Image 1 (cartoon, helix red, strand yellow):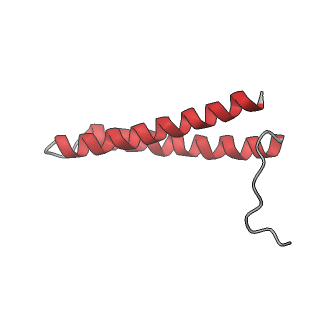
Image 2 (cartoon, one colour):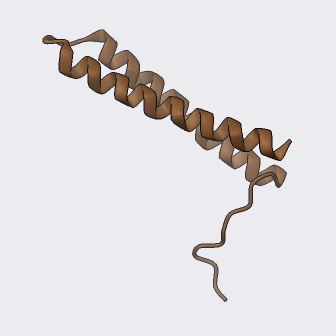
Image 3 (cartoon, one colour):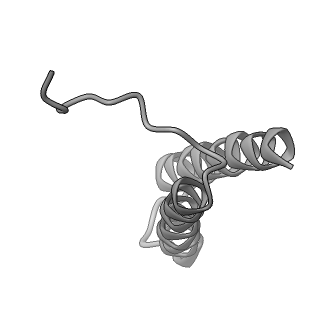
Length: 73
């Protein structure tokens, strides 16, 4: 289950990056204010929040293990 969860996280990250690129493309090609740009950025924000929630849930369930940055020795 842990491996599938990690693949889902990577896939979600790629979808977020794709939506960011899509918004950039719409911003550059549409001459006037575009609803497509705003919609792509809105999707990216929503998916980013979902990605953060998935990381938190993965850590709480023990499927993901933080590497310990900031922990004292």
